Length: 243
Image 1 (tube, rainbow, N blue to C red):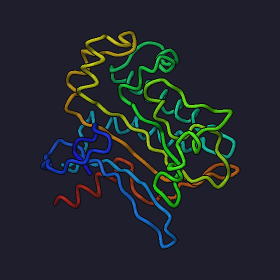
Image 2: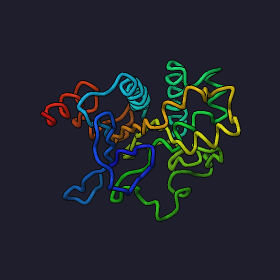
Image 3: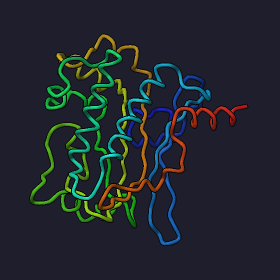
């Protein structure tokens, strides 16, 4: 749990909750049969998202729900990562943070400034199931090799999905000051990124939404569907708790 959601797997617990900040909670539980869960929700500390927080949250939610709607046996998970990434680009273009042709930006990897990790991973008796055997041995195969491009190179699962697979779908959008400065100084992907507009986002933090998905032959089942994640649900729960 962190108010610095832009720091992936942040382990610092020294921060004080303040109005206007976002609180990202990445956690889970173990079933009686010892199966793991891994679920993330992002909350507004004040009980209400600001206008721009709401906009970015909706982009992330669209990334996630669109992917979940496409998952089925036979679908390549790398394609789902790319689908989520393209939605990220289109969403950030709508608020003036990205520009240019979305497909060209995707191929260049410009979106990885905001979405620098993989879409998800296998889930089972371990939170990152069987990865002790080697990520490439579990998430990839002879037909699907890991990509070397920044961002997608961190995708733990890229191969075609099988019926019965359980995995996470956890897209996010993050504003990482150090990375923004590094890319900005080099004017990296300047044809796709509006660096001037990013200055005001350096204290934004990050938003991630994660659910646990069971793959079936004709779609999938969201195993964590009962955990609220719409803006209205989140605001109702957090707002009532702050009164």
